[in-house]
Amino acid sequence: MNDAQAHDIKKHVRTYLVVFAALLLGTFLTVAMYAVHFQSMAKTITIALCIATIKASLVAGFFMHLISEKKAIYAMMAATVFFFAALMYLLVWSRAQVPLGAEYSPTKHVPHPAADVGSY
Amino acid sequence: MEIPYVAKARPDTGLFNAKVGIWLFLASEVMLFGALFSSYILLRVGADPGTWPHGLLNIPIGTFNTTVLITSSVTVVLSWASLKMGNFAAYRKYQAITILCAFAFLGIKSFEYRDKWTHYEVWKTDGTRLTGHLEGSPYFWNTQTLQQKKLDSIKLHPDARHYAFPAASPAGEAGHAEGAHEAVEIKTSDIKRLSAFVPSHGTFFAIYFTLTALHGLHVLIGALVIAYIWGPGARLWKTDPERYINRVEVSGLFWHFVDLVWIFLFPVLYLL
Image: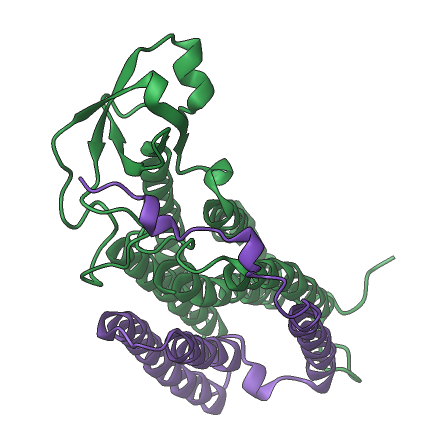
């Protein structure tokens, strides 16, 4: 290995350490966000998944070197992303197929479980 | 006949065989975990309001385990960089930390599993529900166990609150943060159902154990592969260093994927 390549790798090592610090910070933020207790569940889920996606992108981009990979790998990943998105769309589609009123029919009222919980 | 491109990259794609193989395998893994994640979302979204348990998992332990896995991910990539620079001793040191982190993760996870298998919920005939630990901390008891053992009553140390109630304080696990109460005796005739926190307890634990056990299996397999390359497989470094570096890179890619899955599992299972 020549000096230029060694210098290049050393530069990468610095990047890995910065990413490591960012991942730890992301983990801390995720737990801190839980402690904040947002009123809206949707907001909590969105923020938690956004932080997780940023962390996952850092791992994939820098540790797995996806940021500077060959075209063949990008082609494989593009196919994966397409099928993964299709799988997730099936979820949205299946939810949309539930007829209105089918989930909480007044004739099939299910009591809130907290009402059954004894005090102790 | 010699197999081409096991060490040198193919000129047109710029990739060696194993790298193509691992990325195709990871693509299939994305779909496997994707299917399970979508099952989780369906169960979570479809659960009636107030029925999805909260605070049953230990957040400090989960956070610590996340840190352990992130640390192992950085040591994997540092070990690969060390090999690239020809520093075999540094590679050995970093990968030793990776293997230790992997087994630490599994050890902590098994501790969490053990805690769930000795934690119970009792559904009483009067409609009330209690969670807590049985006297003697037995494993895997259920309603049938009470009949088989011909017990007249059980002694339960109830949790301070039931998981169906939202946590008063976000820090901690239902029943643990606020301490267990004095033991109460419950007659077997008053018990409609008894279950430990095992997959048959309900949908939450069914999907929790499926996802985390599958992930744990990946951690175990990844650790064994890395340990083989680090130990007996290291002879290749002397005979064919380029191929050895490729093996470290490929096993590292798998390891990063395992870390990546946990990055999503942790908030989804522990926090939401």
